[in-house]
Image (cartoon, rainbow, N blue to C red; front, side):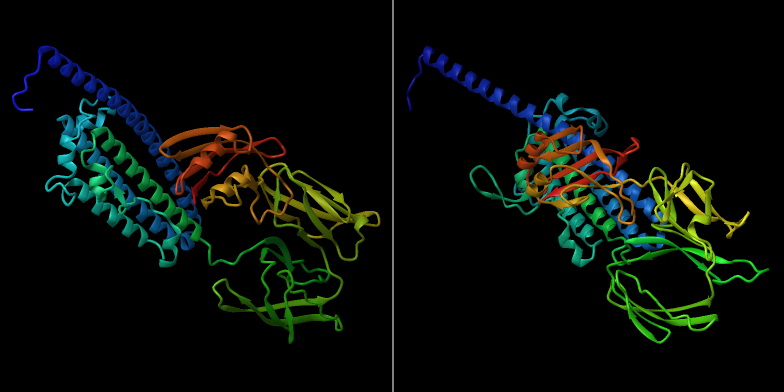
Amino acid sequence: MAGYKETPRQKMIGMMYLVLTALLALNVSVEILNAFMVVNDGMETTNRTYSSKIDEYYSRFESAFTKDPVKVGPYWEKAKAARKLSDELKTYLITVKYEAVAASERISIDSAKVRPLYKMKSKDKYNETTKYFIAKPEDGSNGKAKEMRDKITKYKTDLLNLLDPADREKVKLGLDLEGPFYNSSRKKLNWQMYNFYHTILAANVTILNKLVNEVQNAELDVVALLRGKIGESDFKIDDVGATVVPKSQYVFQGENYEAEVFVTATDSKQSFTANIGGSFRTSQDGVIKISIPATRTGLQTVSGIVNVKKPDGSMSAEPVKFEYIVAPPSLAVSATQMNVFYIGVDNPVSISAGGVSPDQINVSINNGNIKRSGSGWIVRPETRGKALISVNAKLGDRSKSMGPPIEFRVKEVPNPESYIANVKGGPVSRDLLIAAGGIIPRMPDDFQFSLYFTITSFSFIVNSKGEYQNLTSSNGNLTPQMKDFIRNARRGDKIILDDIYAKIPDGKPRKLSAIVLTLI
């Protein structure tokens, strides 16, 4: 009021009020700064962890390319392109972070790279960073924030262009630039103004680290989809076995018994047709069984065509031709399950010799042991490499070899794959994940033995609402705390189940592949 003159007492009370207000503001500022520093530390730790997991994923991808460059090559090239795009954007964002720190702290870029957030004197200031990110006019149309937005927009476009149009809707890249974004007065803002106008340095650093994290998430989603495309058009094989095809089923005295042993792979769910020797046949359980009356002796030749429908819908006509002699067969040895013996499990084998009853057959193996089991045999190999099965028949008072030894490969039991909620990675609903309760180890589809692993422990890494946790379970089940994090997580949050260890019945621990999930 004009002409009003305060008394000394009133001036003192007013000054104390200003000091108290400043102290209150200082207390709030300290709490906010502490919160930013905690979140930023967690973000930087998560970024390092994600970077390590992504490196491991690329390593497995490259290993698949080395084994089958023709099939994997096109997807591997796109994966490398995704890595290049992501590395360039991450490098740019990290450079922007150091430039912002240097401008606010008035130090060199090199000094900014080694100065932690808690030591920054201007971490609660926004003048210099607003000039750097927003510039003039103060509407977000210029400045470093606009440049960042343009680069992120181009990154998302280039990343999606690596995928087929039908696959682009399957990935959630994050990096939301459209909002909508509002200030405290519910005024609509663009991305630049919402994130960087009058935003203190501590918040700027945290936001830039968050953008790096979202780039890593986008990269992992795209590369995981590319990895899943490998073999999509291949025939789906669910049974593998060993077949012995002799050059002749009958050996005259003075001749050699000759045969070819090869692996047969079948899809028991696919139906196909064949015209064999003028007779039309349809498969059952992935197999066409041929029964030809032996009305004539001597060499018999049969030819025909097998018609198979490929996964892409096209038809393939494969010629087939075989010969046989109508006479008692010689030795036939085949693995009941496949042409591989596994260490630590019972491998069933069937053995027969023409003209010799089963109780006259003696069988030996040079790796492990073999014993009778009902009408067949069980092999238990001991060491990796090869195993030779030799068959002799007792004929009167002498023993006669029934043919050359049969060779099989000997391998360790393969690792199971980690599943949770019936998936081994990718999008999953929160409710389904909680209902699943834990990790289930599944043996590969082509592993035909009844063998079960037990999960002994795993790590649970989650980012939900800015909170990062690394929890552990001493078995395969989600702990109550893990379930709480899942319930409170948001759509699009990432969950990594890593360091998954499982135990085979013989007690040997195995480390299984990690599971990367996205909540939907």
